[in-house]
Length: 206
Figure 1: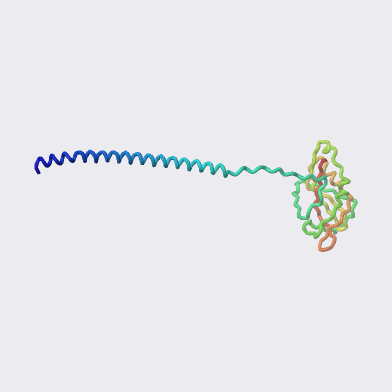
Figure 2: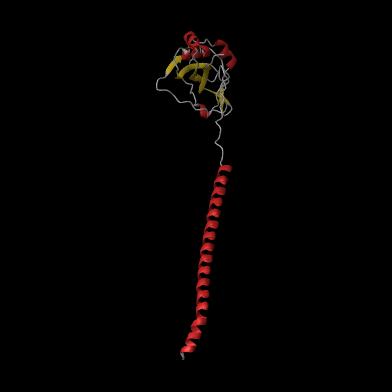
């Protein structure tokens, strides 16, 4: 190749080479700016998603339940308990013999769960005979006395056993109110029978 041809090619190749290098720089700048824009967009989307998530959690947070007050019902003298009622016995038991009733050692006092119908105790009569212990009344003390009544087949209370004595003279007052009371006897298989019957007496103030 002659020197003239080489000189001609080099003269025209320089502008093309310069243009090619310039295009490479422009392309590199464009790619760099495009990547920065993508990162910026992705960062904004991530933050927005995180904010929405926190808002959702706060909106659907369940409120704490409010406590409900339970009102207790107060009765002066409790009604006759059901046959299935359970009473926990204390270690110390006080027995009181009732001499007013007839004594017959042949009577078998059935446990409460073996009878068909419970004895009927005149609660109004018991209530009218209740004498509130003076010291307990003065101090404003209330209590419940749990008794076990041995009622024969004729409805007479033969014996009274104190299962739970709260003290302050409550047990003595309950026993005194039940002495000499006549009841409708319990029955088993259609016949009157003797029974050991648990009976609570509640002392309350007005």
